[in-house]
Image 1 (cartoon, rainbow, N blue to C red):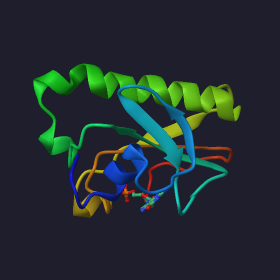
Image 2: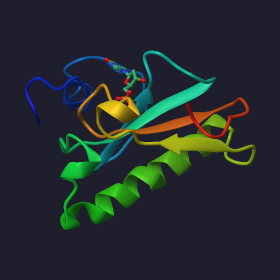
Image 3: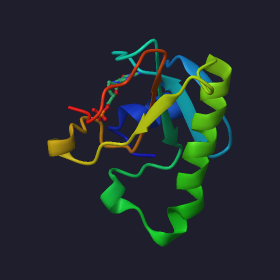
Length: 115
Ligand code: DGP
């Protein structure tokens, strides 16, 4: 837990989040500023600032982010239509919250390449 991390506080319940999935390792909640009809963020409970801070021992945890994303997509009814998962790393990619989070976006057609 990082004291000044907003996502740690959502994961711990210190501040409210619209949580759609949680287990021992990960929490998924709706994005405050949704960019698609479904826009959910999947985070590890452990505070990890960026992809660059991942270590070998996080390999299973990263897999769990995707397993949670799959569950969210099924629950949201977008699994078959399709959805996008994105994890931004650092400023040039647009990362604004420094606790890794997997965006799960769906419910509308997605353009490629992303902006
Ligand atoms: P990124 O740009 O990849 O770091 O995405 C951060 C996302 O987090 C952005 O889409 C807005 C969302 N966000 C920021 N603060 C909060 C918050 O307090 N609650 C929720 N639910 N989402 C937040």
